[in-house]
Amino acid sequence: MSLAHSPPRLARRPAAETRERLLEHGAELFNSQGYNTTGINAIVQAAGVPKGSFYHYFASKQDFGLAVIDRFDAHYRNKLGAALDAPHTPPLDRLRRYLESGMREMIDADFCSGCLIGNLGQELAGRDPAFRLRLEQVFSGWAARFTACLDEARQRGDVTAAATTRELAEFLLSGWEGALMRAKVTHSTAPLQAFITLYFSQVLRHV
Image 1 (cartoon, one colour):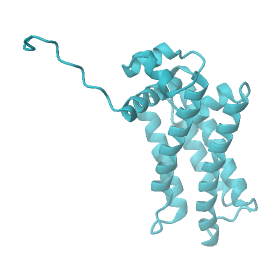
Image 2 (tube, helix red, strand yellow; image 1 turned 90 degrees about the vertical axis):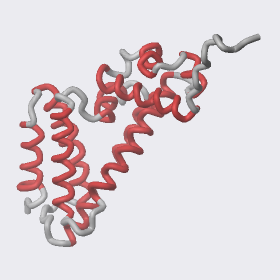
Image 3 (cartoon, helix red, strand yellow; image 1 turned 30 degrees about the vertical axis):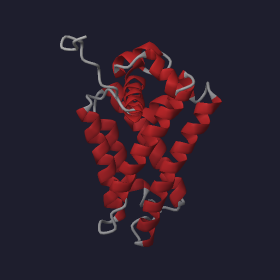
């Protein structure tokens, strides 16, 4: 039998690529329209994979949501490392540049995205203990990175506030997440710029 006119076989995606596509498109949908309003059908359609592939990698939508959080956290920790682990740059300059880069990202996204972890925290932390625990672990890890940077700044004499560096890091995290939410509502960088200005001019140097 001649194979000359047989339809070509579609190339199979590697398993890791399929899983990554699901997570990538799921994160985009969760960030733009929320976890609860995003169905599995929408995720697999956006990723361009069969629905059976979803259940091959994830036991449930909750399992998938936790994996999305882990993936985002891994990427974000790399971003924090690139921004804050720069020994030849003063620590507060690193911190300011990190926040200013976040402000530019909001502009590039037309104020429609914000922080995925912050968005999921507002939506899910009060309803699902598994999500609440995982989100708190993520936030605590970020706060630890900010604390290390602020410790360097305090050793240089650049931080004179009476609060501990951990308290200052927690304030930074909570205040910045709130400013991101306000920026989405107002479609303006004003809340972000106000937070940056007050944090560096007043909070860190308040005696």
